Image (cartoon, rainbow, N blue to C red; front, side, top):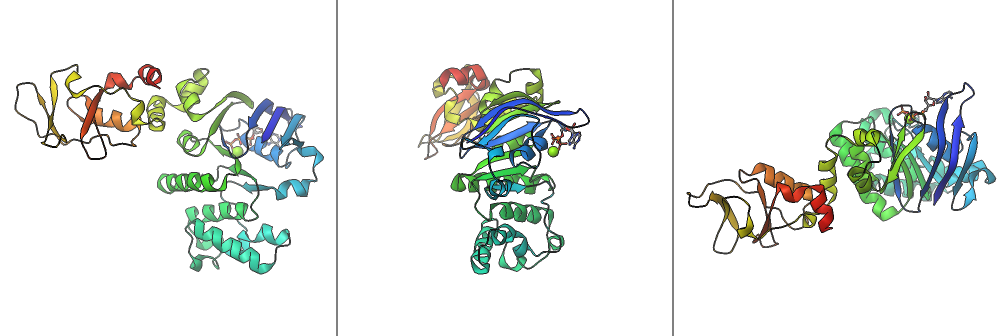
Length: 342
Ligand SMILES: Nc1ncnc2c1ncn2[C@@H]1O[C@H](COP(=O)(O)OP(=O)(O)OP(=O)(O)O)[C@@H](O)[C@H]1O
Ligand SMILES: [Mg+2]
């Protein structure tokens, strides 16, 4: 568990970068630290590994005040990924990744085999291990940066916009890979980003900082999207925050009506096995609309997309065999009705 208790950092020139920040991050969780530029995110990370000392307040890891620990011992337990990957340019990929294990006195063989294991985990094949950072793409460099931070298997990981320098597609890939990996590794992670979608993908908790380093809100991604404490948080999460929220909820949370209970004159056309094949208006010829049904395991967002894509304004839910089980309209997607059902 990482705890910050009323932590303040005022730089000598008077700038208050972090102001009375208190938060608790349980072991194994990922805190996505969101905030505008200059809101104290990097300063907060650097106070946790004591690259910066707080002016006031206490930071503890597993109940131990970080000031009571030897700074080298503290940092051995913390992997740190900085923006732009920050690789050593004159060391090969493998030597970058083995840096910390070697400093910790691991022998060469053990360090190398650990590094190769991590590189493989991040989808970097053997041929890359002897290249220099400049011979890798931006996304590959960032993977190496994360592998390097994980090399000595530290329980805590601090990541400062680790995927900031790559294009949106590679970035989305890295986020999903990281979230999957984290489910296996169970590290305690503070992940700085100013990208809301990234925060939602990787974070089990989200903290939103406002300028001046004041905590605006902390909570689960669902909490913060559904119930922002004020306009600042609501704006920061985006005008489409309801749609983002639907992406985190299961389709099963959306009210389903019986096929016969659509509040319009549209009807679902079924084949002999009960699978939907189209829509028609009562009494009119069958249309040939392409149907994208909502399958088991889909998100509530898939219900929204199916309803918007259909002329009928409704989505059809199907079971594992493709048999229609019910319909949902846009009304069924309102937050109030989803929360009432949940
Ligand atoms: N050494 C320093 N001396 C004075 N002010 C500083 C120092 N380092 C940072 N600051 C100021 O503290 C504030 C917080 O900086 P910080 O780097 O923590 O922001 P950030 O949230 O990480 O921003 P970004 O998203 O741009 O990386 C900023 O106003 C910055 O100018
Ligand atoms: Mg920063």
